[in-house]
Each structure stands twice: as C-alpha cells, then as structure tokens.
Length: 192
Image 1 (tube, rainbow, N blue to C red):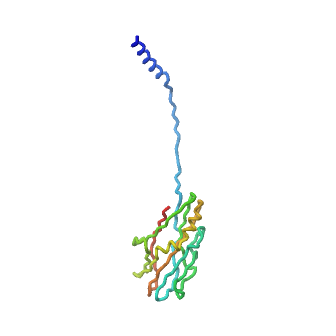
Image 2 (spheres, rainbow, N blue to C red):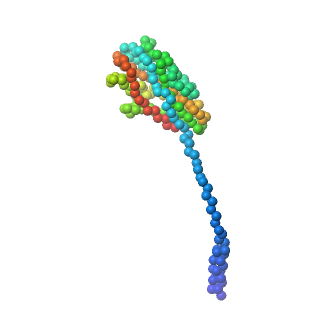
C-alpha cells in the first residue's frame, strides 16, 4: 500500500508540472544612453608678451591675468603687463593672456592646472627661443599660477556654464638679449 501511494504522489507532481506550463510571449525593447563629457576644454588665445624694449641689464616682464573675470573671452589686452625696471618699454595693449575656454555641464567643478615645456618636458620653465638663433628667454612656470585667474574661474564654476581661464606669468629677459622674435610651446594640462 505504501508503494502505491508513493507512485500516485509522483504521478500527481508530474501531472501538475505539465498542466502549469503556458505559452511565452517575447517583446524587444531598445535600450540607449547618451554619454556627455562633464566639461570640454578649448584653447582660445595664445600667450604673448607683445613688443618689449628691455634695458641692457635684462628684466622680468610680468603679464598678470589674476584680476581677469571668468567671463572675459578674449586675452587681447586682458589683465596687465609691467616691467620690473621702469626704463623697460612694454607696449600696452600689444599682449595677450593665454586663454582656455572651459565649458562644464555640471556644478561645482574644480581643476588643478599643470604646465610643461612641450619641447623639453620641463615643468619648471618654458623656454622661448629666438627665431633663427639659439638665444633664449624663460617663462617661470611657478609664476603662471600666481598670474592666472584660476580662483575666479573655480568660484564661477559653482554653476554649469562656459568660463575662461586666463594665463599670465613672469618672462625673464637676460642681459644683452639680441633683438628678434622669441617663441616656445607650452602644454597646459587641466586635471578635474
């Protein structure tokens, strides 16, 4: 009798399992997403110290962009330029702060800038070499931070929008530097 009950119970389990299966229907659903950068960085203006007539003993020219607002889009004539020696002639209005546009789609963005001489890899000085010669001027990297408007930009970036990071610095002109056009390349890295 016990064997018969067990067999009957097994038949009932299999019978219920077979009776409970239904037809399955499928539906395809497309899934998508848009990935957007939190910020975009674009160079607007190169940095130029303009036309300078230095004293024979050399000088340091300061391009100060620290007071430029974060909404000033052009570097032409932005900030202030001055010479360490009153006898050095610096052409006012003939200079540009370096300008980097930062567009952010999120609030409260901050960044740390880094500067490197593109040619030598130096992170302490950017070398400007005279066209057609080997004479050099030096842009002190430490002076870029103190002569930029980084704090104004970071304050403004509490809200999403477009802002302008202006770069300045101290350009050292050695004594008896030959006349000519001096240029160099700087890589600016913004770490967000």
